[in-house]
Image (cartoon, rainbow, N blue to C red; front, side, top):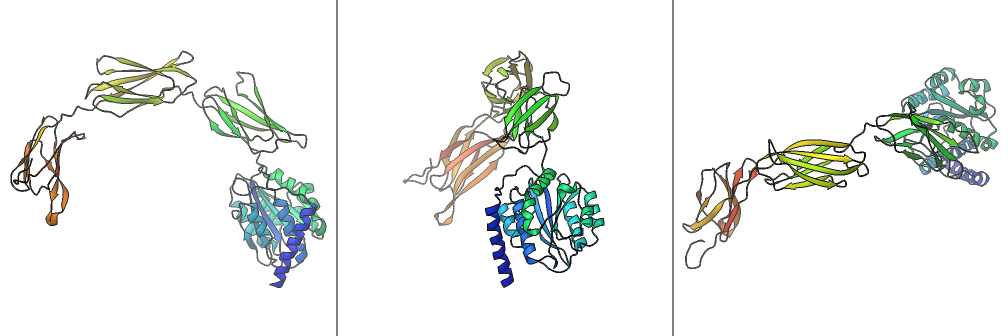
Length: 490
């Protein structure tokens, strides 16, 4: 326990001294996407001081990167007698979490069984996403690394970039064969006390591998496209030049200049159903960047109205809606409607900001042909038609009467048109024992014109509604009133 506490205090002391010597920025590198697996020699040939310095160096090396899926994922695999996965690639999504984990790694001691650790590393790196770059950063003293030629060759054959930091006295020939060319930027031999001098070059080598140099189309319409990229510049360090044109080059090439802080641009006034090629060139006095490019095809032109629908249908009204709403391209809309087959056609003219209207004064139970036309700014007229039916006019009930028969009994009678009726729905309040009451209801056949209710509660509300195939119609209600001088109801 005392040795562990001493190592932690020592690490924090080194970290404080390093921060005074080297100015490492906060997490600012949003330029990269990839997996970095740290292969850390934790065997007995590594002194505690050397092990602590390697951890501190690694923490500072990775500090500027944005972490997590879609950015940089970092895992740590220790080499000892048996491999030890300290943490996987999906564990840390913040620098605070990663830095804390790196500074709390325990030294394994034991043998240098690098070959066994590489078998674990192969499984970790080959099971991750295939479309992101993968880096194996091997931190070692290089002493008796074992037979690593075959597993390193297999890793590299699967697209893994192998970078190595060796603390001088390693087996340089083995390391040369293991590393991914070029040696001058991927293999470093340095004294442990001077390891910080390689941090910037090694970080740049990693960035060059995992830089997400992709120009993506994130939104597409018939007349526009939004391009997005990971920023490689800052607002004060350069600018981006965007060029785009159709593949057939039917028009002159268009150019846009954007500030170095930009990460997206919207290309407008494009032609529908046309294939374009676009390029993005970062310009900076500090370094050269590759030009990114992407091809895309705009969507076919959609002219309003592309869809027409009806709702809020009643016996005398229908609501008509259409889309898409195209304020800048439509002058006005015209809605024409008439009864099929030869009804009088009526017309409503609407502003281009409207995309629905309520048609009223219609005939009940009739089928209408509704046509929505859009007059576009270029003089072109687009029309779409639908058929819509109004609901049948439901006949109302008439003359609902309540007549007293005996105590708590009422004769209910009514008049109605039987055409189209499916029956009646009668409801009232029923008096129960102990002076309580409850709602009661009953279905009656369409031929009914009266019925007797028993155990009717005083002041009960008696309601009768006609039943049609489309649902309940408008009903009538009466209140049963008792009189003090008799048991009669009214």
